[in-house]
Each structure stands twice: as structure tokens, then as C-alpha cells.
Length: 292
Image (cartoon, rainbow, N blue to C red):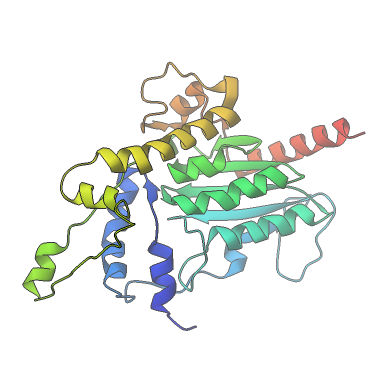
């Protein structure tokens, strides 16, 4: 598969939402990508490791096997979230195409999304929200790490379940950004850059220009604060009365281990894959009863 640096540039475009630990882990790879170095990348794993189908008896079906009535679709959402798929990462567009295929399959009663992600591109969230707005069948989120952009996309699920009470952590409902000033580096390599704006375009890029000079007012008002408000609105809308808004830091970027996340209303329960399967079956049965 052609390793096209253009799709790397597209993948890195726009703001990101990570919990800080995940951001630090991703930073070395990001530095390589910014320089156009793809040597640290591997081709993305095969689709059969990203999505699968569980039969009513609990058997994982292999490719080519008939999907029995009452089966459950499973999608793995691991690592940094990207909007568009590349040769080295599955994108939200591809994952939600899988979700739509499950939702439209008459033999599949619902889905489990196995999430282990500290966040990713802000743009990666919208395809998930669009899917949720139009889906017909239950979705259960089974999460280990579910932070920042990952909890944003998880919020509309019918049930959010931490997969254990040891490592599972949920939250980081907040927005931050980091800007790199490359001016000194460019000077060292003898590169002089002139940025010229039309007379009619005095505000173009001004928030970033101000931030580069140490004035963060505009970038907060025009980018970070609106995103944070939208993020909080989505969480409050979908978690509703379950949320304990009195919990310190709940909507301000704090991370919570599973038990505390459940007490705060960020998740609905703690279990495992088998428990998630039972929950999908339960939700599907309730839906069938309500539709009679």
C-alpha cells in the first residue's frame, strides 16, 4: 500500500483532544509525522481484528460464516482517534461504516464498542455522533481508557460499562492545545518565512499569531472555550440526571477510575465482555417489547 505523506498531513490537521498521559505517549510519534518520517508507522491491522460478530451462543464468527439471527456486532476502537482512515490507522469514517453495516443487518440485534482510547482529533467525534443520531439498535460501550474525545463519542451510547475496576479510567472532559514555535529552528537552518495577508484579511490567523506571541485570549475565546462548551453540552445532554455535577472536576478535565466514574454518573456499570453481551440482549429485548 502506498505510504502517502498527503494523508498523514490530512490526519494531523485540526485540533486534538487527549488526556495528558495519552498526549505525552503520542507526542514522539507526532514529532516523526510532522517531519514526514513514516518509519515509526505500521500498516493498520486487518479489519477482522477491528470488527467481529458474536453468535447467540457466544461464538465469534469467522469471515464467511453466516450471521445468525440474534447475533451481536463488535467494533474495537483503540488508540488515537482519526476522522479519516489512512494506511496506518482506522478512521471514524471507516469504523462507522462498519457500525452502519451492523445496524442495517436484520440478524444483528445490537453492538458492543470496545474502546481503549485517550482521545484524538476533534473532527473524529462527529461521525460517531451522526451514527448515534440515526441508529436503530442498541449500542453498549465497553471501555478501558475512555478519555477526552473518546468519552465525547461514547456519551450517546445506551449503556457505558467499564471493563474492570483496576485500570479502567474515564473522563478528561476538557480542552487544551499546545502550539510549537518553530521560528528559532527555521532561523538555524537559514529559512526565512514571510506571512502576508490581504488588506481585507486582518483577522485571518490572528488567534494563533497572538498565541505564538504569548497572548492566549483570542485562541481561548475563539477555539478552546467554544469546543469545551460543546463538549460539556454533549455530556450533560446524554448522561442527563445520572451526572453528579457537584463532583469536583467532573466537567473540567479530571480523570476518574471506574468506581468513581460510576458514582459520578459518567458510566452506568462495571463488568466484562460477557456482561456487555448480556446488556445488549437485555436492551434489544426491551426495544422489541416497546415496539410491539
